[in-house]
Image 1 (cartoon, one colour):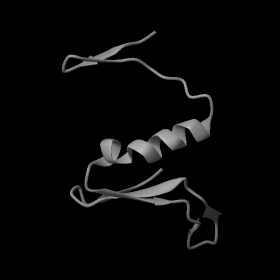
Image 2 (tube, rainbow, N blue to C red; image 1 turned 90 degrees about the vertical axis):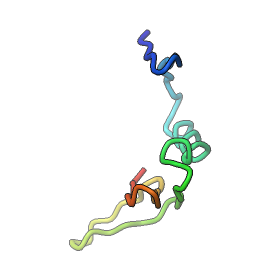
Image 3 (cartoon, helix red, strand yellow; image 1 turned 45 degrees about the vertical axis):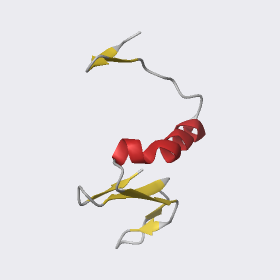
Image 4 (cartoon, rainbow, N blue to C red; image 1 turned 180 degrees about the vertical axis):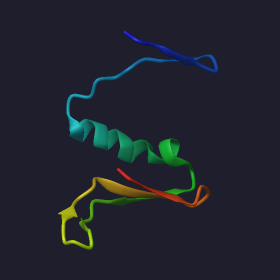
Length: 71
C-alpha cells in the first residue's frame, strides 16, 4: 500500500467499487477539488463540429482560476 504524506497529512489510496461511487464522491466534494468558487453542471451532451457527440459526467467552471474542466 502506498501512502502519500503532505504537510503532516497522511493520504492512502482508495479503490472505488465502480464509476458511480467515484462520480458521487466528486459531486459531493467538487468545491474541495476544484475550489470554493467553482460551479458544477451535471451531464449534458456535447457535439464536435464534425457531429461526434459524447456525454461527460459533468462540467466545472472555476471563476477564480478562469478555467473549466470536463469530468
